[in-house]
Amino acid sequence: MVLQKMRAGAQGIFAKVLVGAIVFVLAVTGFGAIQLFSGGEPIAATVNGDDITQRELEVETERERAAQRNRFGGEISDELLDRLIDRRAVLESLIVNTLVQQFARDLDLSVSERAVQRHIRSSFAGVDGFDDAMYRNWLAGFGHTPSSYQADQAARLLQNQIRTSLSETAFVTQRELRRYARILDQRRDIAYLLFDIGTFAAEVEVTEEEVEEHYGNFLDDYMTAEKFDFDYVRLLRAPFEAEVVIEETAIELAYHDEIAAVPEPGRRAAHILLEVNDERSVEDAVAVLSEVRSSIVDEGASFEERARAISEDLADDGGDLGVVRKGNLAAPELETALWALAPGEVSRPVQTEFGVHLIKFVEMVDVAVPSLAERTADIEAELRSQEADRLFNEMLREVDELAFEEGDTLDGLKERYGLEIETLEGATRSSRAGIFADQAVRGAAFEDDVLVGGYNSAAVATADAAVVVRLRQRHPPIERPIDEVREEIREQLAVERARRLTEDAAFDALGQLADGATPTELADSTGIAWQRADDMERTEPSVPAEIRATAFEMVAPPKGERVSDVSALGDGSRALVVLSNVVLRDYGAMSEADRSALARWVEQLVAGQNLEALIRTLRADASISAIEFTPSG
Image 1 (cartoon, one colour):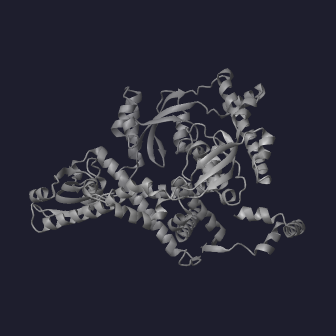
Image 2 (image 1 turned 90 degrees about the vertical axis):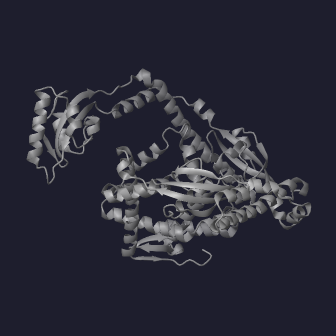
Image 3 (image 1 turned 135 degrees about the vertical axis):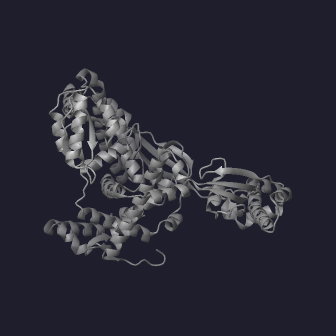
């Protein structure tokens, strides 16, 4: 609606005079004059002197709305979005992000622009056909532009640095591991009676009078979906690539750039490390490694076997460091020693901040450099695709401008580019056929400017074309005749009644069990067979997830006794669950691999808890002022 008003208002004489006045002021006083009109941006919150503007809050809120729309495939109403998204929570997340950024700044942590771009590229590596246009459309689905997404990812990488630091310093005692093992990997013996809603629904009788009464009371629920007929044009991308001609000199330049980026030959290396601590001095470590080196060099002992026997780093891999290039090793002393060796040689003991090492130069690893002839076809294809992208994006901007300038017709686009006006009839907001298979096209088609204002949509880049859509006709919802929905209503009423019946039956069985009824008597009275799951884990696939969750929430019974409860399943069924035994996991009986996996999981858990504690501390120590929200949000 905003664009519609702008379009209409921009044609008036007052608007033209106002625009002229603004241009004159800017020309005379510069862009600082904007403050004369704006008076500064309203502030949503101030965190230790850093401001979060209301515009930033609105932008972040809109991004969250876009993300929710994307999550639901566009099938979510504005009213539901308003209920889902709490602007207080959005502002709180901005405050937390600001606190973390300030903390990272105090620690002199930073992320380079190149690292951010490399991270983004790696995120989409392996996605076939992913190009600039698809990237922008993907970002638009989450309310981002390339620059805002890059800033968002930079902030996330900075937070990951802090999280990694906390993870590396997280400490878990053996006592804690034993406690977690007992709780997390416990087993439980259960039995349950399943009161299946389908069985109860089949026995429910719904009268014709009940169907008609429900139809009359809830007529709004039985309307057809609103339908739309759209006209659209598509400017295909393929011709741009077909028309591109790549000169041999461009291929040669690109090839030389590739060769210049090829890394130098690497050195495969291995090392043996002895740490220096209260129990071992530098002199002790040097003496031990000198003897080890002598046994390897003079007596022919295996470096790899000695590494497995005594090294305190990468021992299982025989000390293998992989392929190393200059600048790769964290310890410069180790790099200096490695580059002084010939292939096959072992260094004398080398002291670093990590301890004392022996390093072996295993072999030189050359980098295969393809010839120009071998790379020509691929380079030509890459250059053609890049040039086609550039030409297509230029054309996309032209198409978008013309679609806006001639906003009430597609004829201008048809004539200038020789396009055919195509039609999509009977589309709904949930349609996924044809051009509506692309989420960005659906979003553009259902903008207010298109549906209410009657204007062309913005030009949208899909995987293979630029698309502009306009509404031709709108078909409002109509009542579906009762004969069409009769069985649907009958089934719905039967399920609603069956849901109440299953709940009543399950709690009646629970009461009987509490009054002393035996499991056999319950099975006979309900006509439902008990199902057992002995020694059940939390992830046992044969037991419904809701029943497992209830079973592991129940208090362990005293030995020889049982406890019971009712579990609600997602489809409306109910289950009477009886827990008879709990077996806690014995940490001492776990394999070394299971212990290591548990330790890593607990360390990550503790790191997450440490991060939450850090944020609470930062917030408690911070000077924060924020706007107050009305009860409506």
